[in-house]
Length: 143
Image 1 (cartoon, rainbow, N blue to C red):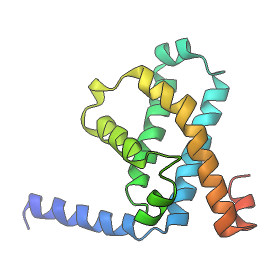
Image 2: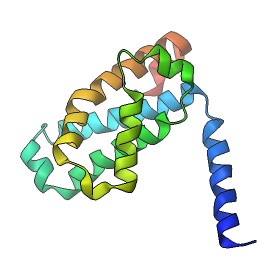
Image 3: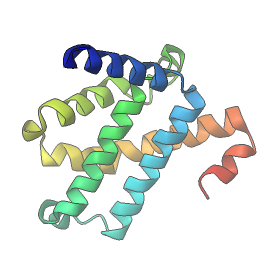
Image 4: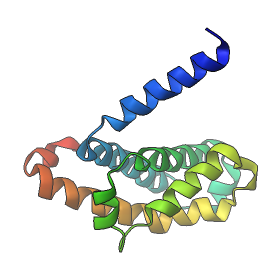
């Protein structure tokens, strides 16, 4: 088996594994990243100057945002359609692609703006969706 065939096979297995996640599971993962971003932002008191100068802070936020974009790729079309007036899943996915393929072109201000403005909206959507679809179970997921 050539390296190329092996890589393509592994990519297909990974895609099928990720695709097997239910919307609820994906939304739980996205919510976990949102909570992580907000906790980090609070720890650093939403200090933009520190964000610019603290590589660990910057990279933590960047990676969590990228993971949200990655997980959003596998959400069902129904979820994306249902939430399209609140969340630009296409925009989130596009940002993920920038992180993954054109990282040097990323604007620090866009990463910051996403963390401050978009992440709380995504978090609220995820919490509401889980509460409505999992009921009481969702209360214990993130406490």
